[in-house]
Structure formats: C-alpha cells, structure tokens
Amino acid sequence: MKLYNTLTRQTDEFQPQDGSTVGMYVCGPTVYDHIHIGNVRPVIVFDTLRRYFETFKGWNVVHVQNITDIDDKLINKSIETGETVESIAATYTGAFFELLQALGVLQPTHTPLATEHVDGMIQLIESLVQSGHAYEKDGDVYFRVDSFEDYGKLSGRRLEEQEAGARIEASSHKENPFDFTLWKAAKPGEPKWDSPWGEGRPGWHTECVVLSNQYLGEHRDIHAGGNDLVFPHHENEIAQAEASSGKPFFRFWLHNGMLSIGGQKMSKSLGNFDYAKNVLANYDPETVRYFYLSRHYRKPLDYSDEGLQAAQTAVTRLRTMLTDVESELRNASGTYGDPGIDFVSSLAEFRSRYVEAMDDDLNTVAAISVLQDLVSATNQYKAESTDEDRMALLDAVALLKELGEPLGLFAATASRESGLEDGLMTLLIELRKQLREKREFKLADQIRDHLAELGVVLKDTAQGTIWSLS
Image (cartoon, rainbow, N blue to C red; front, top):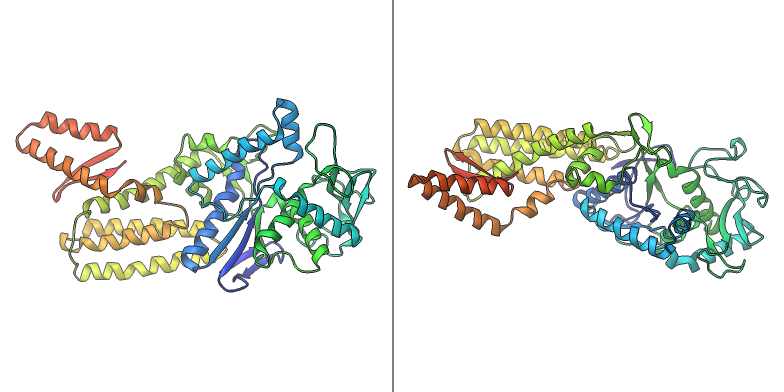
C-alpha cells in the first residue's frame, strides 16, 4: 500500500514496522464545544484507513486519539459561561464519543485526556530545559527553535524565511519570536499544576508528544490530522520529540484537506459552519460517510446540501440492490448453472479494482466507483437471469458488503434485518396472502399500509411477496 507522506513530500510504500501492528495517532478535539463539520473529515477518513488495514490487510491497529481538555479555548468558555473548565470538558467529551458512535466510527484503542498526563509533559519539558533546547522566563517555558537544526522539515518552511504569525504570538519573553510555549505560568482562576517553574499548565504542542510515546512506544507508524495542523502543531511536535530522544518521531505523516462552503474556507470566525450533530439530524450516518469519502482525502471538499443529497441518492441505490436481492432470496436454497458461474467469476475483477484503488493512497473515490459498477452489473444480471441462476446474486451481495465495510457502509442494513424480523415478516406476509385469497382486500391493504408507515416495503412479484426496509 502506498500513502502520501507529508514528511517526504511523496507517495511512499507503507508497511508496519513489525509487519503486523500499526501504531496510528490521530489528533483529537479540543472539547470546548460540539464538533463541527470540518472536524468530522479526519475522523471519517482515518477511521476508514484503520478499517481497511484491519479487514483487507489483516493488520492490528493501535489507534490513539487524544482529548485536549485544558486549553485557552476551554478557559475562555469558562469565563464566558461561569461553568468550570472540568464541567465543560466533560460535557463535550461525552458529546464527541456520542458522535463517534452515531457515525459508526470504531472506538479508538486509547482516548487519553491531556489533564491525566501532565506529569509526563513536565518530565519532557524538564529534559528539554536540561539539554538546552528550552528555557524558562518568568514562569513560562519556551522551546528554543534555533537549537533544533531540522526545524521546518515537515512543513518545508525555513526558519529564516518565516514571519511572525501562523498561530504564533510574538513575545518580549522569547529569544526568537518563533520559539513556542511548552509551559504557561498560572493566571488567577485558571487550572494549574505544580512544576519546577512554578504553578501553571502545559502548552498544546507538548501533549501529543507525550501521549503518542506513552501509548504507542516504538510503534509510531502514522501520525494523522487536518492539513491545518502541519504548521505549527505537528512541526512543533517533531521538534520536541526528536530533540529529546535523538530519534525519528513518526515515519508517516498523513493530512486531510480542509472543508469549504461555497468555495470559501469554513471557520467559526466567519460564521459559515455547522455542527456535525445538526447534519446527522437530517442525513443518516452512512450518507454522511459517503459524502466525505466521495472526494479524495487530501483534496479540499466543498460542503453543501446538494452534495449530501447526491450522496443520499447514491447510498440508496447501493442499499436497494442489496435489500432487494436479500429479500427475494431470503429463504432460497440451491445452486446455479453456467450463467451464474460466469457471473460469480466476474466478481473477482471488482474486488481487485477496489483493492488497487484503496492501496493507491486511500483512493476512496475510485473505490466508491467500483461499488457503483458492481451494483450496475448485478442489476443487469438480475434482470437477465432465470430463476435457477438467481442464487448467484447472493455472491454479489456478499462482495458489496465486504467492500463497503472499510467505508463504513451497510452496517445499519445488516443490523436491522435480524432473524426475529425475518420470522415476523414471514408470518405477516402469509397472513396477508391468506386474506387476499379470501378476497378480504381491505384488511390485506391495511397490513401493507401499516408496514409502510413503519418503514417496511412489500413488493408483490411472480415469485411471491418480498419485503425490504425503506
């Protein structure tokens, strides 16, 4: 598998260091508010990558996603609302986990809280001060960027060519305006911890270094996040980690493109954003996943209701084939002849194309195209095949489900159509059949109409009545 590596600025062949276990760290949320639609993109993209690793590559993934529960944004919200930082963090951490579940995102292996690892951050900062890579000034501690020769290797920004900005505040305390904060001296009313430099709290950039080292150890394969984190956050992580250890930090750095609305960058300051929970109130999770994966993860993605509606139509088409075939052949058995054998043999090409696409820097756009082509081929065979060859359709359904799993598709369909539902529907369909034979059409129609209200669609065919979920 090849992945575009921001560090090398090229597509590199990826293999786990030990051949079987992937250590993946994805920067998590600062829990001061609900997650907005821009934050959802890395969540879905890198969940898809993990799923593909596990289902198609057979690799075990140790997935770490931090929770930043102490930060200026949390403190500012506390001042605005009068609520404690701890209470705010707890509320939106819970909301984040609920969102992951709603989106069908696999639970990360570890979701460490920053506040539970402050001791480790203090130890890292102490080692940097002792080695001359950091210095203290009036209770604040800064990283000395001039001391790290490779500073800028991830972003490609040469230090001498940079200008103050990009989330860096110039300060008279700093030796260099690009020196970044490792420890902030306490201010009245803020959360604080004891340290060798007095009471205070850690800076944001130190958190991910400590957590990735603690939970991944030497399995530091992939570090991922939005491309807005390349500089300064990820650049500053590398500086601290490699200055303290003398060893390379992560081998692969993956970054997704940003979301825009109407071609304009999405941001809370412009007010052109929406919360993810609001989107899920109008669209089902698999439609949302499809929408985000219908554009290559490294490219910008323009968010729109039109795009989501197109995704909804596309997902419905895929589901319809799946549910129609399963409904028709729910209780069928037997084999199929040469036409069925030829059709099943042709399915291998779809799987091969899918793997080729996903192995090519997680090209979900091409992978989705394979799913749509598979449905087209299956619908054509379904229309042309005779009854004795229709069992071959179940092989297509099984393949569609297999290819959909890394994308997070069809889980809802599988879970909703349980054995209990099968039994109840068989009973109701038989009852409706008997009523129709007795010419009690009004009662038969009432069964059909009530089921429709519950989202169950009955379809009368030459082979009998079949049912599916709308």
